[in-house]
Image (cartoon, rainbow, N blue to C red; front, top):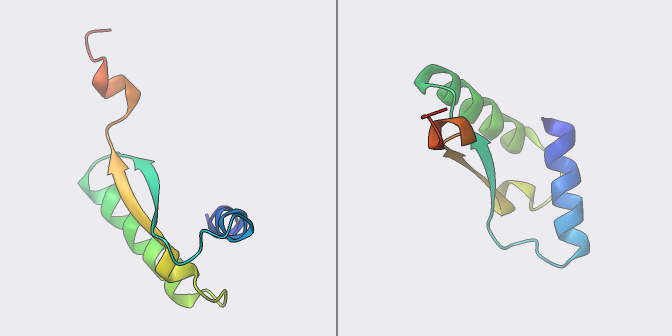
Length: 72
């Protein structure tokens, strides 16, 4: 996840979008897994040595595609 977040941040930096909030969307998996993922996400940002990364990225959760079409 750390590598992916760094790549996203560098892409945004190249587009002069740092300092603006960018939401990284993760699929909901259940309260326990969501909580663990959010904790790891925030830990990675907190310990990152990349200036501005923690202020630019945030996490949100969304329902998965299957949950939206549960009649399948």
